[in-house]
Length: 67
Image: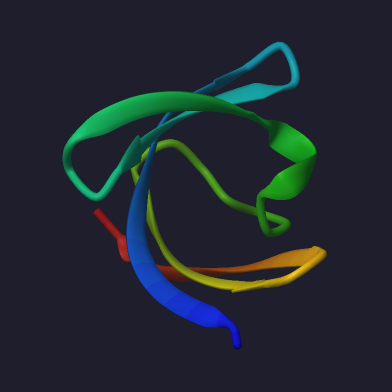
């Protein structure tokens, strides 16, 4: 059986192919810029849905709003 969770990411900084993301208002983590939706800019808010199943993990990252 799978597990679904929802998260809010805020794009802090994008540089050199990497983005610093504030995750759920708690931590900052780097991710590769190519994982972000096209056109995302610093300050954008992203809605993230994570579906996790045995042998598979999927992220849906959508632009939610401008901060």
